[in-house]
Amino acid sequence: MAGPLTGLTVIEVAGLGAGPYCGMMLADMGARVLRVERMPLPRAAPPLPDPLARGRESIALDLRKPEGVVALLRLVEDADALFEAFRPGVAERLGFGPDTCLERNPRLVYGRMTGWGQQGPLARAAGHDLNYIALSGALHSIGPVGGKPVPPLNLVGDFGGGGLLLAFGLACALLERERSGAGQVIDAAMLDGAASMMNMFSGFRALGLFDERPGASMLGGAAHFYDTYETADGKYVAVAPIEPEFYAEFLERLGLDAARFAPHAFSFGRPDTSAWAALKAEIAAVFRTRSRAEWCTLLEGSDACFAPVLSLGEAPEHPHNAARGTFVEVGGVVQAAPAPRFSRSAPEAPRAAPHPGADTHAILARAGYDETSLQALAAAGVIPQQQE
Image (tube, rainbow, N blue to C red):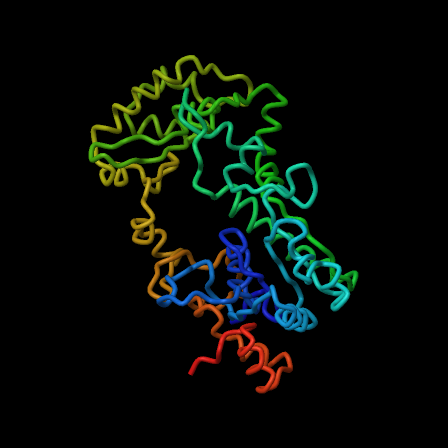
């Protein structure tokens, strides 16, 4: 079957992290994604397997040379979208900024992903995921009780606030193009995406129900009913019985005194949190009496809102993940399968990432370059030599 984005052609000007994640999401859904690698390619052993680069065709161009930009703009003429993750102004300086590309193809959707955004005092400053989520207000609340803010990997800024936001923006603009017939430019900033994900907490804060200190909010680790606990074998479990009926089942299955715990359950008003730390210590002592596997036998699949805390290596082996096919093996690497899932237009299984530049000559031949022109570009170092 073909994925829901089948028939769309997207040009990905290769970058790091969040950009490739956006490209992966689009390719997973059936789009033909042409990944533009930088020249010269490294003279090294075959690249390491890269799940984020799966499902693409790979073309290598030296965009510092006019001939490389000319080739890219020729591809733009037949593309539905292009995205890049340079600092503001870099694409314009190289010769393929949005004005130039939209002049070539007025229906093109041009995606720009940065950390700080295209405008503002910090727009041209360097930064990484941690900096962007720090400025958004998200990082401030993540960490242990009484401790300092802790980096949540680079999931919130790079991947959620950046790559996923850009993929959503591209899909929205492509849908709008069906009505207007015109392309447009998308400014996807990791700062904006991370801030957007904090909106529920902004509402809580307005009501005086959100303690912004690390680990002090209910969903940040302060509540005894929303936390992780160590088990007898040094592993961990996660519990989240927020609703009253789930909380009651959790207490019953752990053999805890419901009369004493019940007054300290979740409340939409202003809950009494004074005993939460003591109750958490009591629950921690209970969880240390059995192994993680024993707690899974007792709690997994119940309404106690329980799950074992699995490592990335353990997760694919869990029966639920195995039953759903949540993980697949591509190119010898176990990785997450395409998501979300579709009832009718399910995408094909992802293909392993190609060797950088492997499809250069074939892509340019489809764009109208003859063999003599390709050889001249290769001789000038604009593209790699044809591989035998």
